[in-house]
Image (cartoon, rainbow, N blue to C red):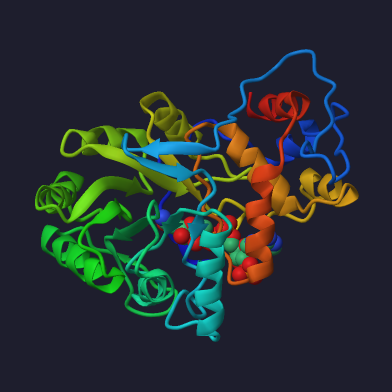
Length: 331
Ligand SMILES: NC(=O)c1ccc[n+]([C@@H]2O[C@H](COP(=O)([O-])OP(=O)(O)OC[C@H]3O[C@@H](n4cnc5c(N)ncnc54)[C@H](OP(=O)(O)O)[C@@H]3O)[C@@H](O)[C@H]2O)c1
């Protein structure tokens, strides 16, 4: 998977899958029938802190529903070119909005260009309140290939090109896709600040960074969000999530449901979810949403049915007992 090749930021203590298997659900938490909006049974004596907010205000002025949509999967094979069924991609984007999604994550690199073009085709003129978060700073020499380019001139051109493709005058959230090891991040962020000062970007976000890089970036330009790989089985960016929570920055976990490879079949959530009529993906998304009030999962899909299933996960709630089990894993 291409994104697995990305260097991961400084790792916190993290959680291994084995440790998760050992402790999760072992405390007797069980799934209740799908008719309830509570999927895990409660036997708790303590009440862990669980996020219950359904929206988040990004940068103090953009209110988004916390379950977004990742538009990387609406492109062709290898995140390259057009999808085999373009009409289906358009339908998915429109359905996402109908279902209440108002945060769409994309990038100039997805396709390249085709993801942004499809978003404009499907949704322009955009409904009020829709936040399109795009990114720049990774180039695509070919299918499956991703090459950082954080040079200021490149980033400025990339912003202009995304504005054109998305048919926007200003991009609500522009994320530096990754830090280019050949370019000081201050220079890359300096270019984005110039674009912000010129009115072409509303807010700036980061992706694939560690807390030290976030702190450095914030000296150059206000940062409102961070996008790193994170899911129930991969919490290497826990330290970044903690930073975002403390500083009230949005945290967009990519691969929120495990990416193309999915979550491991033997994940304990799998059996439990199946036994009680919800999918493991829904359970994993519910866990993410409750993990932190700044969490903004952006699951990606090329399937209408999966989209509906993913959005329905916002109705599921983990009980404090389940939280206790998962917290124990993280200890
Ligand atoms: N900043 C970065 O470096 C970076 C890197 C990677 C991704 N991203 C962003 O993060 C978003 C999410 O990541 P992702 O799309 O790679 O991974 P993901 O959301 O964890 O997983 C997507 C995969 O899961 C499948 N899927 C989706 N819903 C499902 C369901 N209900 N049941 C079963 N399978 C399901 C999809 O296949 P189907 O198409 O068959 O549904 C697809 O293969 C991307 O779309 C992109 O916007 C950012």
